[in-house]
Length: 294
Image (cartoon, rainbow, N blue to C red; front, side):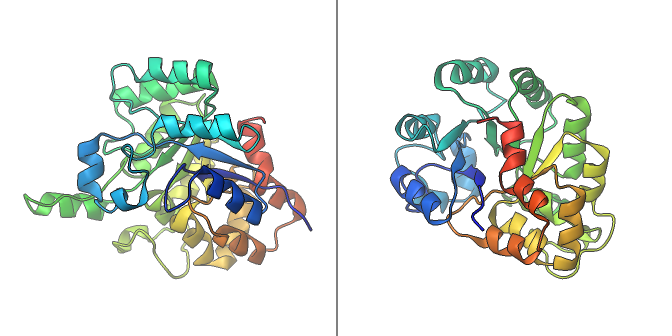
């Protein structure tokens, strides 16, 4: 059966895929539209966190600049929905975002991926502004207590981290109830299991135990949503299919299909869950269309 698919998480010009190659890849996997997300980060954070980024991102700039997102929207207006998250620490970030919405039709604040706590005052002000503009906030989370301990243990240690932990996410949701949040990344998905703090891994394996912080947060905050993209989202479901199916059924209105790459891993895992057709439609496209109408 042919399905309608919206990929809520991909980037322009990375991992060897320019815009034309991304569209061909979308056709290969039956993806009608993609949220084409920028990534803005200061160069000193970008360079020190992972030098390998330079080998995989467009060499004409840092990370995924707004210019590349705009190129995608102009060349393939029927295939892309634009996202951009100016660094909220920038004094003029909200004004720049407003201009991007008005001039270039940006529809999503994302991907937010900066070396900062996402519940600081600048960020909260940005999220509330996004709520006023009707933009969902898509963020990358990657900072557990083990990372903090490692960072503090040695003067010269530099751990790659983004955002904070699930406590930070709960603060965001509580302080910005009118804003839609979409979580992604190893720091987000590892907490699907109640024993997440027992391992250093951002990609834990084995059965999921009850009362994961993510599950409890989803029950507590209706404005929190899940992005299935990348290895973290895929792993969270694939590690325990017996847990994954009831998880998707419980939160069927707040789980969104995404890839953050160019393969079909998420499709393969979702197919194994044998979801009811109406639930699969929500995950593959309807939830995305509700948050960002086409």
